[in-house]
Image 1 (cartoon, rainbow, N blue to C red):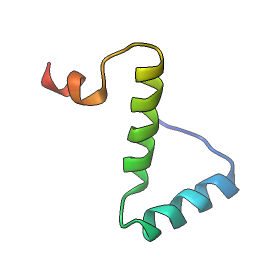
Image 2 (cartoon, rainbow, N blue to C red):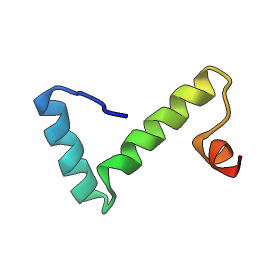
Image 3 (tube, one colour):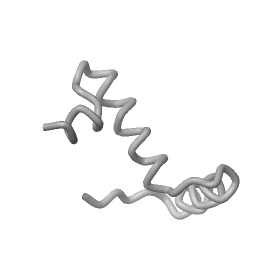
Length: 50
């Protein structure tokens, strides 16, 4: 899966990852989990159990 974001957003995500000692992928997965929850779907963790 590929996600395209504006260059400024990508730069901000990189800085956030450094500031919080996390990976950009961690933030993207958190966002996907929020969207899944919003629409009443299982979390990413639930999909990994299957």
